[in-house]
Image (tube, rainbow, N blue to C red):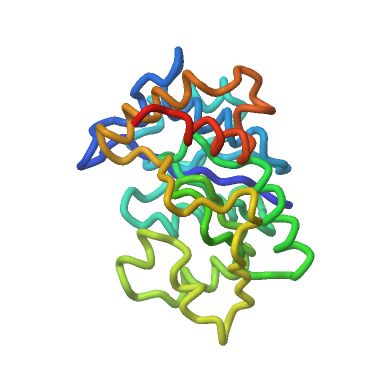
Length: 225
């Protein structure tokens, strides 16, 4: 079974409680989940620290996401908790910083991963904040047993793609229509949030159009700087 697992928390050193900042008429985390619901998956799961459950639980339920609570700092273990709880074979990994995920690119990279039997798959050269990663559950469980670096537990997947001798890694360039590495659509700073508000307001209202890569790139490039 494939589960789309979204990691999110409330505390952020650069932009406090950014998950709850409004984007349109909803908190940003709701917009992230709205985007990710456009990605094909059997389950949709919000993986958060224990201290965020009370805040996130009603938002996740409204967005059609299940909830899995785990460690705040050991994000790798949080993913593995979701794998064990929901008996997942593969995860599509997403993060709460990214309200403009390319849903069509996510579907394609996951399909490529499944066709290849890849332990890890992710496009390079997408706009920063546009992509997801497709990861075999057993590869993440293996990483959980073996990693020693704190950074590998915080960032989840580097251990896999740093060890291609042990894991089947697929990291192709994104298709040309989505290739725009000079663009940034993540939300990490106040400046990012200001741009996200402008981009959200300028995109089509229909979710099936709003979260398509070519549409997002086109609208973003037309925004005034």
